[in-house]
Length: 145
Image (tube, rainbow, N blue to C red; front, top):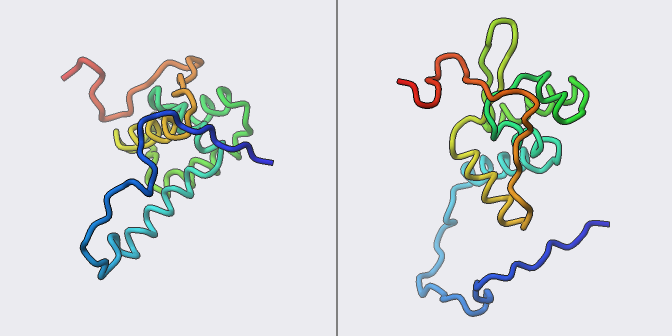
């Protein structure tokens, strides 16, 4: 049985109090292709283990072994979930010697995650400190050129 999401206690008006546009709706506000892409992105966020992986990556790039250790998941499960996240363009991977490092695709993914945590009324995650944050090859280090 799923728990109901706690009601947000903010100053949002009830939907019935929102202004209604006088303009007729003649076509959808978003194309079918755009809606499908957005739905695919939301699907990628629909599994707790994928959300946990993304939360770990908020702290910076990580290897599969870093993620496996931080989350207590099997390596094959982490790799599978990373594939789904890559296909949804939420994470990217780059080689670092013999390892692959995974990172959030861009700052929009971080913004999306923080908005989702806020919307769900759950605390923003603190990424695990088990492994130091890394810089992907080709990226400038913080404070660097």
